[in-house]
Amino acid sequence: MSESEPTVLALALLGVLAVLVIVASILIPSGGKFYQKIPGKARPRRWFVAIFFSYFAMFCLWFPVWFLDRGSLIARLLSVMFGAFTVFIAAWVALGRMGAILLPVIALIEWAMSGRVRKNRTPE
Image 1 (cartoon, rainbow, N blue to C red):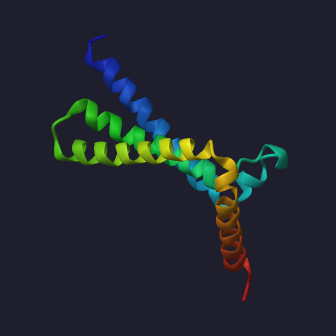
Image 2: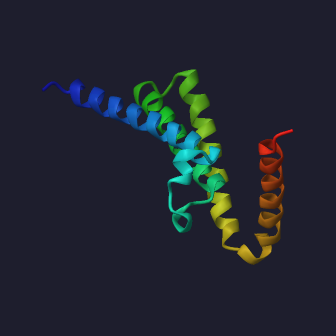
């Protein structure tokens, strides 16, 4: 086995994993049959799942490009996007430690989102 074969295999598996994560990140937040099959007590909040699935998909897109050609413009742009996403999640975790302060804001956002979802699903 030459040295490039494991690299190509790893990148192919990472690509397949990225596609599966993207499909799951679409199926879970949409609230369709796939989401309904998850037991009620085990269902994650859809927005929470969507954020972390999107982060993983961004990693799966960024890493191969960065690994193969670090100096290219697309690698730099994806690095900035991945870095911004990482800062967003780090800030979210840090602010999450102050749950009592953010609880009213989170409740307001969930209330607004549930009203929008109900409005979109109501037949006219």
